[in-house]
Length: 448
Ligand code: LLP
Image 1 (spheres, protein in one colour):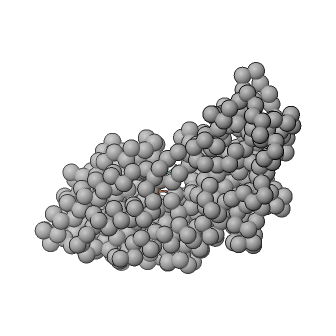
Image 2: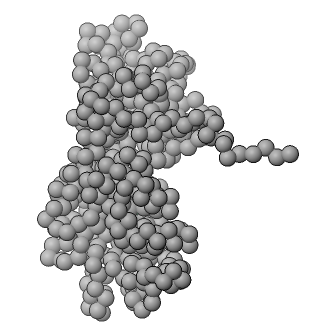
């Protein structure tokens, strides 16, 4: 828990607002973000890089709500997009096209046209075939596209295999060994202008060394190109810095930035970074309410009103999110402990979350729960073996849910997507209304 989410008289607050009041006002499930936490994370990044020319391109995929994009745009951010849809969001949120880099292995012609029309900063090209297509599309439009290649440095990011992208057997980027030849080709193409080099090796990295290894490999290519007269204007080192969900110890933003600056010492190229998770992950929580408690012979289930459609990370990556009560059991009742020790409650033990149970009173008895949603899939869980004192109606917060939470949500089981609320001091702003069921099937037709 960071200083933006804290207990005050046993109530969990975000900034100056009790989260239980937000749940009462807007219902559950809902995502809640702290404006101060978002601003603070961005400023830490910008401060750490201020000694050199840089652009922080927020990875829109991590959280694409317009209010969040707008907040970052006002702080000076650029954006890393992976679709035409994300570009339209950035523009609708007041982002500047000339601060946008466009990544992704499957850019369509329509997306290229949209980005060329808007005048984005750079296309991060991920294959030879994409290079040819972009040259053609730009030519037909009478434009010149600025490009960089996303080079796959073949570095092990040491993260979850689903979110590791910089190994040579991943689908991302162009092979390290082919990069020089591709740059030479691109430099001779009429409707392209080679401006940079890019790499992104994965997400939720908790060590600095893979970033540096990747940067060094990429820089060696940049030097070789310079020797051939192909001078680059910028170096894009991607995103990927991890956050603390449980017991991880990722480097601080400052330490990470310092390491990047060290690797780039004495070089003139502008630095671009594409952070997502580290800017939003710990600035948001998902609130949910216990619908039912279901005792089992081996396990107790807490069935909550949020599910894998709202927060997919546990189901998809077996990801850990701390789960804490919005109302902490009072200290008197937590003197006595039950037969269940806190050893299963990782949040209590490791991440320094306050104890969520341990009550000796019958009604406050702490048990070990599987926290699950109502979706008809065994994979629909939000947390395993969490020790808490729960009752029907208890309100809970899934912590560290600001990144890849709402943006990966779906309508599975015809569940309208959650509302999103931004807190700013003592003010509440509804930044996305809860979807209605009518919206979900508005585009569908029954045939005669
Ligand atoms: N740049 C590129 C080209 C990317 O593919 C990504 C993330 C980023 C930047 C931002 O990475 P970040 O700083 O957020 O680590 N859904 C997964 C994460 C997938 C990340 C995909 N690419 C999760 O929930 O953990």
